[in-house]
Amino acid sequence: MTADGVRAFDTSAWDLGSAVAAKGNRTVSVCIPCRNEAGTIGELVGKVLPLLAGPNPLVDELVVLDDRSQDGTGHVARQAGARVVHIDEVHALYGRGSGKGNALWATLAASSGDFVVWCDGDVTSFEASWVTRLVMPLLLENTMTLVKGTYARPTDNGGGGRTTELVARPLISLFFPELAGLQQPLSGEYAVRREHIEQLPIVEGWGAEIAMLIDVAASLGAAAIGQVDLGTRLHRHQDLHSLSRQAAEVMATVLARTPAAAAFASDRLELLRPNGAHETLNLAERPPLALARLTTET
Image (cartoon, rainbow, N blue to C red; front, side):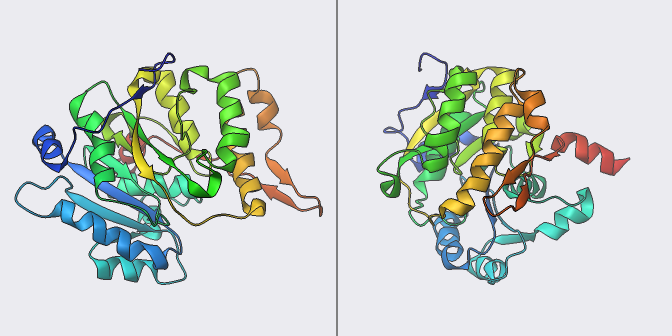
């Protein structure tokens, strides 16, 4: 346990058998939100599928969310053996949204497991053991709600990524020091306990991960958040122009959840480019899924 309450778990004694035994009659969903990931999604699905095999599988369902891909991602994932849900199927039930967080919210709506393990669709170093490590703390301890993956990133000299190191980490240190022990706060690989996450709103844009951390800590305390080592993570590298939009949305999301800065953030919802372009930041939020389901049923 770090001084701020976020717990780092030792995964050395965990294996698939111990995870299945700890799972009992509960259910686990692996969800992969994707947009134009045809080059990587097939192999990723292939590594998850063995976890669904046998009379007592660790994983009960694998859902690939196709967020309007133009490269055949959905077809590749389906051919590889995943259940593919198109984003429009979710929008037909709950209304339209956009952004990475919206895709996460859609996978939550499209799946049913007591525990949800999320993984980005562009990861090329994924191993099936990641699922075991991410979900194990939730299976073992009822007080755990969210478990983030940590890893070495060779493209960033082992750091947390450019947006993490230059934006997320300084803001966490300043405004949410209880979360400062997280090595990869923006990690796309993490596991959650559905019963609590369904009670929280999910930011539609790039601020989804950091908002979820802040909201879980606010409602349950930082001790409800853990982290596990996944080894090395390799994925597609984004250019700086794309990252500036991502960084602005992460920053605005944190400021919106910081009482002293919320008013400032609410009046500045655009990224102003040097060429005069104005890009609207996506800070919209999907409502708690439990509430959205109630609304559609009435």
